Image (cartoon, rainbow, N blue to C red; front, side):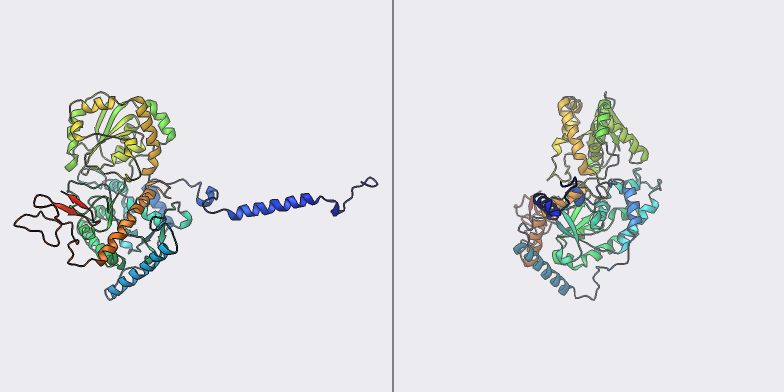
Length: 527
């Protein structure tokens, strides 16, 4: 300082401070530009972090139809004048080239890597949007009931897995949260092909002959496609979640991957050789009750005074014949509630209220081994007691159901006093642990828009990833075996005996006293 004034000469500033500021600015820029998609903050990976997922089918559908009005688009249908063989060969050559590139020069983990590439067929509106509009315009018609008194539109909601998967696949990428599946626009890039036909809506809301005619049209449309002809349908996904849907023609598409509620080993719904775990995928029903979240579970825990609860149809066919036997055994027992009911609005409220007041919820077989009641119990925090000897469960390659449910054989359950004695023997510590696991597992059974990571839509594609190598194996194998090969077995097998020798197209490899079925996946099953 001279003459009482500061020296403002720039050269008097410290060079160290300038160097420090420069280095700091460079570091900040380097950090921002070096962020990869996997290390960025969550708002980069989740474009709508504040958007709450919609779990109501009706509400989600209303939003879907309002925001995604369909526009004119090209059609993948192959016309009768096309040289189909040449088209199929060209597609096969293109897929081979792309797969080789991915294997040799691209993804070192192919074909085990994600995301799975899915081609979604652009089917005519009569198979897709027209059916959604039909449901939307009629779902308030509460007089439309099935023969056993269940509301038709509620049954459609329970089996609406086709809507939830399709709505996620065709959503703009900016709105999607799932990272293990991606929609591709070129067939040659696809690992799998999704058939967006709403088979359950058409079954319940169309006249019988109209429905059958639409089924036949859909069958021809799909099986005319070059991609179907190339693989014989083995890499095609067909949603047939209600056991009655597509029933009149689905035998012609039994090579496809079916999305099912269960396997139904009784043979009442699916014929032998049509469905099996190695080929198909079991998906959960859409719950009929609201989620009991962490706050709800905390509030209801001290109010769960009912030991065992059941509300539903007390008489069913096929595997559900166990129900009247259980009713006879349990009716009138202390701390047990057994009620007749359906899936309408009144039934929904009664079921939700009863499950939230109960420790255990009975889940017996229905017309098929599965029941929507199982998933209602899970999202209600009520420990399922499963009495269904032939039940197959969704995503069991990922989820361990022993952590959230009790499994009881039918023979034990109907023994006088056995079931209640067993339930009373379950200690408080095990009950609390199982309830905590239910709270964690609930997310795996809640379909939503947008589809959530680890939700059922996500687990579908995780399970599909495990099937992909086997699908490719049998697709390629089917393309090179000769017609005289004994390995070209069908699933329509007959027992062999001395007067009925095994022919080249039969699947009997077990001698005159055994019937061995060989599925489309190449595995053998003894009957």
